[in-house]
Structure formats: structure tokens, C-alpha cells
Length: 282
Ligand SMILES: [Zn+2]
Ligand SMILES: [Zn+2]
Image (cartoon, rainbow, N blue to C red; front, side, top):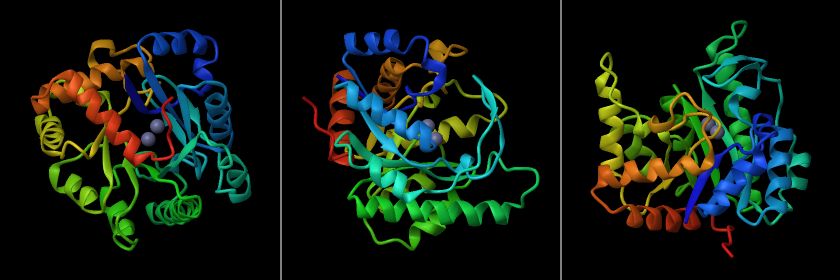
């Protein structure tokens, strides 16, 4: 059994084939964590979790949805809607026992709206991140943290919070100096299909640094994820990513850490159950 600790199976792009994808996941004994990014995708994550034993949900607002921003990813391009954190709405969703975390929330400087300064964007992201942090405290839930091109800014904010901080830096990419700061704060690291990508000839250091993190992260501090529909592992590159592909991530962790695949699956599951401690596997 593997827990895909971060995917977006509730996204519209899966509407046509969601049941087929879920069937493959059930056959392969893959459990899913559907992560909200806005109000509607959080609600849909909860609905799916309530109707499927092997799905759990996280609720929150992704930093790209705080301003209307043009987003161009491998699989889709869209203008994100402007939202702020509607606490009453999320309080209602948090009543579901299948909600196991808050997020994804965090910092993103990769997509910055053209009509805003970096300072304006950061100020808003910080405000909404802290609102979600306090919301998570109130509901006794861990955080699913997104960070892209903004490690320094996130670390500055995390420094001010009481430790340990419960949760995960999802889709971790960065080097060991950054990783060890998050680990010191009490956070865990989530690895995606990015770890399966080959070394880029133009920038070999980036992938070597990430692999070093996978090798060094303590065995009780990592989890695995897909971030589906984004970031298909190397074997399926160019295809839409689906949650069962998380096996590829576990395989690569095993290779890098010199462990067996079964050991990695077991560790990743134990770690997920510890981070998302409201999760009950039946
Ligand atoms: Zn993310
Ligand atoms: Zn995500």
C-alpha cells in the first residue's frame, strides 16, 4: 500500500476518467490525499473523500489564487481566480472527519502578476498563510505547505512561529541547507516525480542537490506524493500525472537511499500516518 500524500484528483481535468483512475488506484492499493487549492476545489476534495474510503482531503487556498494570475503549466494554462481566506466556509468543511490537513498554502514567487510588485504579493501571501496557520491550530490539523522560488521568504515567516511546526513542505525542491532548516522546524519533506527526472545538462547541480536531500533526510521525516495532474514521473513524462504513479517516486527514494522498495513504502506510510494523525486506515 502507498499513500499519495498530495494530488488533485478532484480537479476538473479528471472529471471524464476519475472513476477509471480511482479503479487503478484501488487495484494497486494506492490511497489518496486530495489537496484543495481554492474554496471550490477544497469542497470537492471533501466530497470525494466522504464518498471513497481510500481518499482523504486537505482544505485551503494556494498562493497563486490570491491574485488573478496567468498560469502556464505543462498540462494546462489558465487565469487563476482571486480569492481570500473565508474562515467560516472552511470551518464548515473542517467538520468532515475525512479532512486531515490544511493547505495547500504558502509562498509562490514563480507566478507573479504583472501589475503587482513582489512586496505586494508577499504581503498578501504572508497574511493568508498566517490565517491558514491559525486556522490549522484551531482545528488541530497539520499544514500542507507549497513553496516555489520563495524558500527565504517562507523560512523568515516560519522562524517566528512556535516549534515544532506540524506538517509537510510538499514537492520539496532545494538543497540540503534549505531542507535542514525545515526539518529543524519540525516539518517533513514531500517528494514528487521531480526526483525521477534526469540531470539537466545546463544545470546539473539542481538535481544533484535534490538527490542529496533524499539521501540525507532521516527515514522518519519524508513522505511521497505525485501532485497529479502535474509532474508525471520520468517514465510517464508528457502524460498527465495520475496518483498511482507515486510508485515511481517510492522506487527512486529506495534507489537513492539504498533501501528496498517495500521498506520505503512502509516508511512513507508510517510517516504519513504520523504527520496526518487524523487519518484512519481501515
Ligand atoms: Zn503545490
Ligand atoms: Zn498541489
